[in-house]
Amino acid sequence: MNPRLSIALLVLAAGAAAATAAMAAPAPVTLVLKDHRFTPASFTIPAGQKVTIILVNQDVATEEFDSHDLKVEKLVTPKGRVTFTIGPLKPGAYAFMGEFHPETAQGRVIVQPAP
Image 1 (tube, one colour):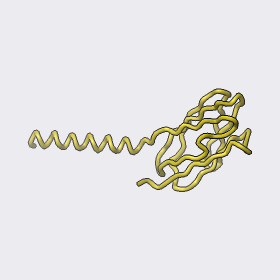
Image 2 (cartoon, helix red, strand yellow):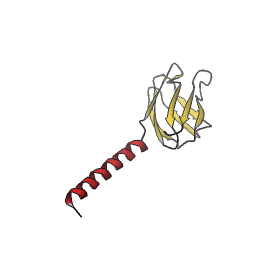
Image 3 (cartoon, one colour):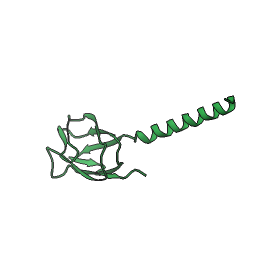
Image 4 (cartoon, one colour):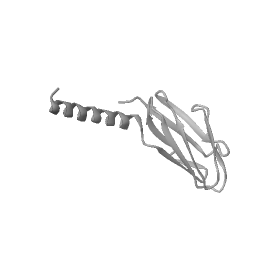
């Protein structure tokens, strides 16, 4: 095989692998809990991929991230931080709440079809 062709094919393969890796790993989502409210209260993620959630509790009370839709329960201590993964999910809307303050700590994940 021609050495130039070999190099060109190697470069193309490396580029395709990098693009695939970038598509396979969406950026983590940071949720901040303050005054018993989530910020952002809703966020959008791509369907069919795992997404890391970083939950930062700025309150002086423990809270529990709870979602029957997402099948997740995670305690976060006062002024603490917890990281967990959701998905892969199908397109739709998925509710979550703070178990200890459900009247104010509400949110949802919007899952959109991959482009």
